[in-house]
Image (tube, rainbow, N blue to C red):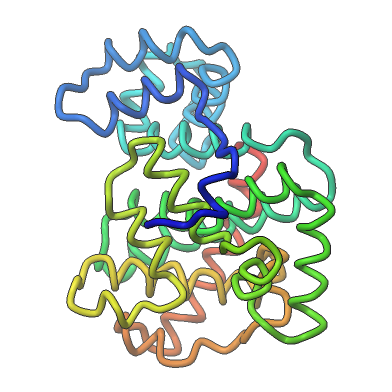
Length: 275
């Protein structure tokens, strides 16, 4: 991807220790001891993992777990999700109203995507969680770097009835999708996430790449569910709240949609404070 305007933008970097943890968790040579050694160097991250592992939603009990216990209880994939979520949240220079709204929408999409993936079995549950979290990640960089222009772009999209991506393109010369794809490429994430972000608004391009296409469909349905539930990112305001053919594409009937919506609401209310 070549974009002169984007080339001049300073992209946020992951914290060094988070980058090391994720490199280990995405790689083949992973062990509880290696993960524990890296995470123990990051007090806030270690505390977050211990807190989530001890929460009853994740099987916690009365006895506080050690860090090794917590990693084994959660599993490597869940730990990876926590590290990604903590890293993304840490990208915000502050957590004002705009940033809080974006963060709620990102976490809502991540939680909903994982529930839909578990229901459909059309993608890895953890890939769906990270995909839901990352597909709007470029907006975090934009609100950090250009807070006034972000607000202006958001207002323009709402007033003119155009997508946030189109409004970004006119304002900056690049879209928040292009920013997000550049970010995950810089961070060394698997290619599937870069493709998910780049083609999210035009998935027919990747129709033959069925896994990525299914992942895009899952996150798109998650976004609409979050919009229906009032927990979507502000960039989604005014978007279509119907589910269109997404349920059919993913093999989910109306009853399944209703059950998933209920599960998303419960999981979001319980899960968001943990992150």
